[in-house]
Image (cartoon, rainbow, N blue to C red; front, side):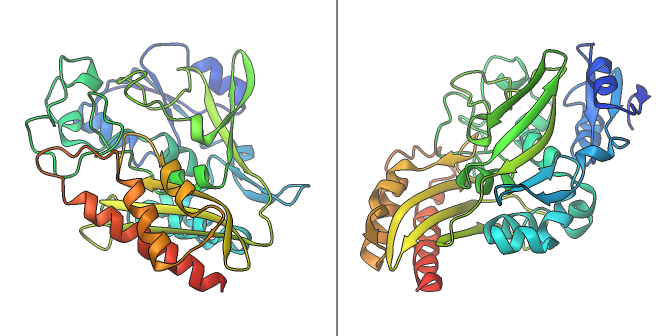
Length: 327
């Protein structure tokens, strides 16, 4: 059962940020994560501030420079089905189409997908874990088959978003509004690793709202993709995933961005894999070299060592697929 709370539906963005004044005031967009968190007692809410009346936060449109603007209230289904998105950034359309189930994609929003809470069963359960202000991460020594193998730093959640890795690979920028004004944050810097603060997911302050995402224009030779491996075809979060944005010249990768999902507490950019393929033709040998490099710093827990070879296989396969598609 949901707890009691006040519900407000502001008409303007300023009204919305003004309403987020209390420590237990929370934002409602699509609600697919929020309502579950409230039911499960992950956090408490005294006031729910709904953004559903702010039509200016919806929509997908091309920008003057040839990039895209996507409003934070745009649904995941709209992104997956958009011809603008699939024409410019196929990887983003693929990532959106892999989110949860059709019903949740119809309701969930881009802003919510970027800012959702972790799905760790200790965080969601009745455990006073480190992320909730407790003394430790229970995945260490506990059941850890779905936890992270990179970047744990005391808290071993995995970031649950399928759109965030692609947006990091595309060098997208988040636009944020709050009482202190507007600001821009690269999506690559939006999420907070546990090494910096194990109790925060994003850099948003309590009274700030993510309003839109801007993606720079793609070059004519840019190849983008997203691959997700999960236990079931729908609903499940990534066991291993990889977003690619590779700028090809003939068969050579002039530059590359490789971002992993299901691997770390934040979307994990693998600069090691990027270095292995940048300036080289992607052959089975270079793909294998990049996959090995991506996992070089992996430190699995007792139940999730299977993720290391899984990631190696996924990364190598997707790199070769990108090269074949371009060729």
